[in-house]
Amino acid sequence: MGVEVVVEGLTKSFGRQVIWEDVTLTLPAGGISVLLGPSGTGKSVFLKTLVGLLRPDRGHIWIDGHDLANCGENKLYELRRLFGVLFQDGALFGSMNIYDNIAFPLREHTKKNESQIRQIVMEKIELVGLNGAEGKLPGEISGGMRKRAGLARALVLDPEIILFDEPDSGLDPVRTAYLNQLIVDLNAEIEATFLIVTHDINTARTVPDDIGLLFRRELVMFGPREMMLSSGEPVVRQFLNARRHGPIGMSEEKDVSELEAEAQQGHDPGALPPIPPQLMPTAGRLRRSQQAPGTWLAANGVVPPPGSFVDERGRDWLREYPRLLGSVR
Amino acid sequence: MLKRPFHWRECLHQAWFIVSVSALPTALVAIPFGAVLALQAGNLIRQFGAQSFTGATAVLGIVREASPVVTALMVAGAAGSAICADLGARKIREEIDALEVLGVDPLQRLVVPRVVACAVVAPFLNGLVTTVGLIASYLFNVVAQGGSPGAYLQSFNSLAEVGDLWVSEVKALVFGATAGLIAAFKGLTAAGGPKGVGDAVNQAVVFSAMALFAENFLISAVTT
Image 1 (cartoon, helix red, strand yellow):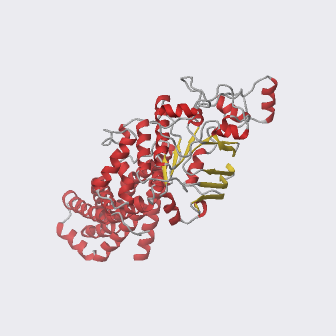
Image 2 (cartoon, rainbow over the protein chains, first blue to last red):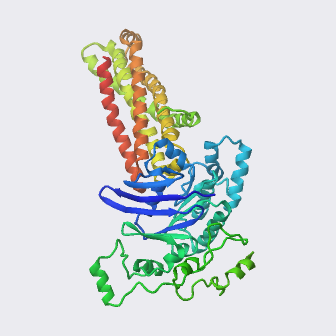
Image 3 (tube, helix red, strand yellow):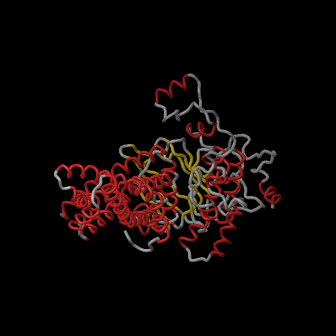
């Protein structure tokens, strides 16, 4: 069962440049959260701060009653054992083959013998679908395989919190879909707390329970998926529609006069797209942190954009949820 | 820094690696070094009519000064650059971050074994340079310049002391550790992609060379 991560008033700057200020959010235990944001808003910096690779200027990160942002070196190494991190390119050790890479944490931290290690490693290799590649070096396999191998290595010590740094970067849409399904299935199985950092709209719309949006050096919003996807905020609409018109500019945010000029010309970030149904685990399982479609919308009296919760086969997950759940089981 | 567990295998592996990249170049550089010393000093000394003292110059020149410096430059240039490039590449590929997240201290796991390996290997290389340099100097003096073997050995023996060898070995140890430390530090602080690694290697070699000459001066000043 996962661990809750509570972030309070976190601020990070490099020299005079403030990366983000006053970020406050709670990653619910066992849930999948996505942190979304345009390129260069410090998403990866946030991830590295969460595992203590970078120290924040101010604020707290509470895990299990310990403040990871302000603890000593020994405590930090102890708390890090709770984490598994999938780095952008997998961050595999280039001098070791895939098998040794995945076995590395076990050999370092446990007293297991080689046959026990072999059993665990082969289990994880099978879980991420890398059978037959265990003898290859990281330089000899594709980017998608490196990511999956990195994921397997992050999983061997049974972490309580798993962080994904842009799992979809550099992958084609089909492989991204497979990886997203793997993430959802994995969450159903091990029930750890997941945080995915990405700028891929499709991942953000279909995978998580909660979404956060980083923009203009702050966390604009953090909350349930349905809240974010039904929000009228211009920056949310611009991001979800992938439009040029809106508060996000090419290199940084646009200033007020530019926005007014856009408004006069009748440009707009566009209407909200329909909310897609959430990605379900395979084999009819349910994730513990998952809620029925429309739960947040109904509780807050918000009407979703037309066409929401209808999948590509025309099934309406909002109306037919109990029946659909029965049929996939 | 030397807290347990000490990674013996990594250290042995690195020591072997350092020997394999630097032994041959070090020996090859030592030959012209000994020969040039014999030629230059020999010429000068012959003008004073004291050719029989060429052997003595080899003691001072090769054993005490030249061989630790040649060793140090080779350790910095061959082993240091390789260590710096290796750690730098790992740094920019996020391997070092991954190591830390997996709860492994990169200082203990990667840096300490490398620095220890450099410090241990350097005195051995120093012995190699001294031997090869003296042989080259002797052969050049006796065969090429027509010096007398007996006079060379006698003047050599009259000036040589075991203490000189010790100072030389201590110098090599200090230089090896310094080169290893600088290379590891520069590698672990590399930033800015592949170009950053190139810059780090360049700086590591230049800084090591400068630090080594300063250390050489200090140790020579203290011990004589």
